[in-house]
Length: 457
Image (cartoon, rainbow, N blue to C red; front, side, top):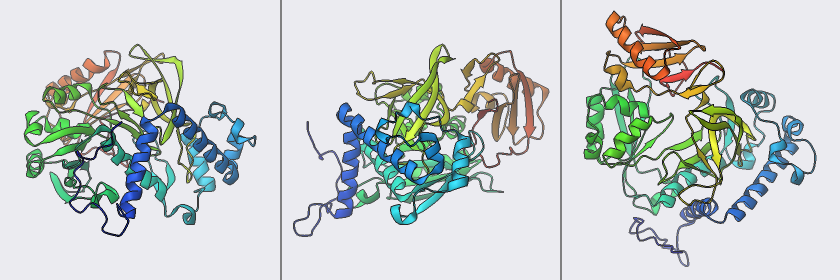
């Protein structure tokens, strides 16, 4: 084992100037947390699983003490004898009921400030839940830990593209920069610029110009905005603008888009998370599509693999237990996803992994008889046959798919036919395709604005 900080760009005055102190306490505590998280997730499997079991018992005991709802679910037997698989699945309906009847289980004076959050509604009706300052601190430390565990260069810039609806602002693009993304390590590490670019129906030329002002470094973005850009620029633009890595967020990545970036030497590293529990898994550095589970945060189960086949592979429903969810507990929470669970990764990582994650169940095309299939339609394919500002595809039932083409009051018969052909090439001929031109798509509270969503439960 070798502990070496020579590749980490420390500031010239990184170390403390106080007597008998090496690193200032705030920085030291955060760095310690980062090291501890890395130790849990990459160290001894036996030690990790023992730690998880003790954290689970702590959470279950707390829930039984504080919540009538959870006492009914967990029972009042000796917590040490309770097996996770014996606890009923926690559904979105259960979550709504628990929050409405009991509110937060932890008090503000016990864990700092409490914050009420809500899901975006991209995978169903938005639900509310509570998180504490402890959760926020963990999320920041775990995000930074990933950079350390992979040996990513902290001196590179970090660029975040974020959709922000601004009524009446067409072509909206704005940017703001800071250096605050490493938390308390900002006083310790000489990090790159943290830049956030907000956009709304962006002028792609203006967006590209803003990206070129500074080297991109780590590019964090929804895949759909990358596809919009690729209608106007060649992939090599991202190389020329200094993209070191693409970190897709918020929606599934089309494998063809991954291939585009791989072909120009830009690695792609996805993460798998949910708003309710935070990080679930991080994509392996060497095995694309294999996600190392964030065992410092969650325990993951997959159930029903014997009943569900996806593209010829056995998958099941993903259940997540958030080990630090004391404000609003998430124990065996059905997040609405399907995947396959493995004991370890082909790269040698000795920890559980998720594979065959095709996105939310809402992102899968449902066929009569229970069959499901992946459904990727790139904006570039649609733009090749019709001009538009935005699009949305919805499966409304087992027979019908509705395609909304935004920014158009009408479409020619030729455009309508061509759009239908594109959709059928992905969905097959068993669906009726309705093409609707609309001036503006009614996204409602759906912040993620997913390009495809199945409304079939």
